Image 1 (tube, one colour):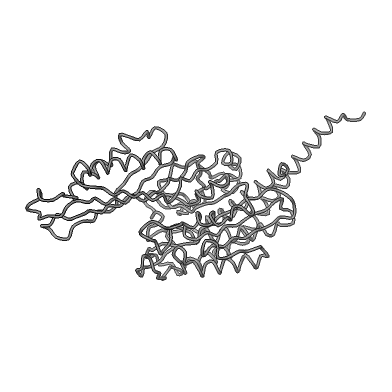
Image 2 (cartoon, one colour):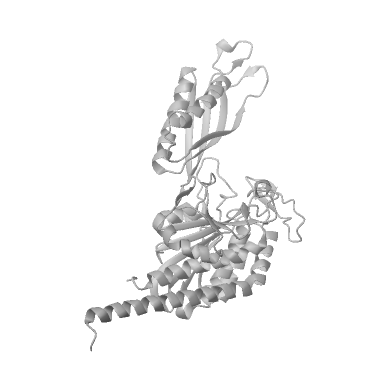
Length: 444
C-alpha cells in the first residue's frame, strides 16, 4: 500500500529532525574532544596575554597575536577595527544563518599582587600618568577562549551550516586616553558604528565573562535585563567666593553641595518605581576649596547613575537634573549638570536565552544556575541592541574556597582557576553550532 503524501511528509520531517539531532550530538562530542585536546594551547595563550596586558585602545601586541592565530586558521581577518580590534569571518560549507561571538581584550590600571610565574609586571599610560597594568577582569581568558573556539569551529568548516563572526574587541573598560569632556567611544559601540554587524549581519550574538565568587566551571545566566546601564554624572555647583568668617557676603557651594548629595538620595528612594528593577545614583568624588578659611567659588562632584530599564534610565536623568538644579537655586547658587551615557543595560533576549539553555547545561555538565542582576555594566549591550544577544558568566573561583571571600573582578588579587576555561570553550563553540544547526533549515 502506498503512503499518502501527508504520511510521506510526516516521515520526512521525522527523519530530518532525527538527522539534525544526530548532527548536533556528534558535533557536541567533537567540540568536547577538541576543547580538551586544545587545553594546553588555551592555557599557554591565556598566560602569555596575562603577562603582557594592555589598556583600552593600546592592545597592539594582543591584537597582533590574535590576528596571527586567526590568519593561520585560514579565516578572513580584518584588523584596525575600532582602532585596535580584530574581526574574523568563518564561512561554513553549507548555507545557514550567521552568529557572532565576542571577546574583549583590554586590561585595567591595576597592580597585580599574585606570585604567579606569569604575573603582570607591565606598565602603561592612563590619563597621562604611568600606571601598573593587569588583567584584573579576565579579558585575557576571554581572548584565549575565543581563539580556541575559532580553531575548533574552523575544523568543522566542511559541515558547518552558516557563518560565524568573531569579534575581538578593544576598550571594553574604556579608552586609556579618556577625554574629560566625555567625547569617548567604548570599543563595542565604535565597532558597531564602523559597521561590523552589517556585513555579515548576525542573527544572534553570544558572549561570556569570567566571574569571581562563582564556582569554577559553573555558568550563571539571566533572561532579560542582566547588567546595568552606566552613566557618568558630573555636577558643578557655582557659588560666590568669600571669607569663611563672613559667609553672608558670598554663596557657599559646599553647603549647597552637601544638600545636593542628600537630595539625590531621594531620586531613587522616593521618585523611582523600583518594584520592577532597582536603580542607583551614587556620588563618588567631591572637590572644592583651597584653604580652610575661604568659601570657594565652586564645588565639583562626580558620580554614577545605574539602571536596567531604558524608560527608568531617562526618568532618572530628568529627576537628577531637576533635583540638583532646584537645590542649587534654593541656595542662591547655580548648578551645571552633565550626564554622559556610557553603557546601555545588557539585556539578554528572553526567547534566545530559553532556546540556548540546554546548550549551556551541556557545556557546563548541568552546573547552570540563574544568577542575580549585576550592578556592573558591559558594552556587550551595544552588540545585543543590534541582534538578539545572550551574555553569560563563567565561574572561575576554586571550588574549595569561600565564594564570599574571593577577590572580585577589578581587584589586585583577582584570580582565575584555569580549569574553568575549557568550559568556556565548550560554551561558545556549542552556542554557535547549536544555533546554526537549529536554524539552518529555516534560514533563507
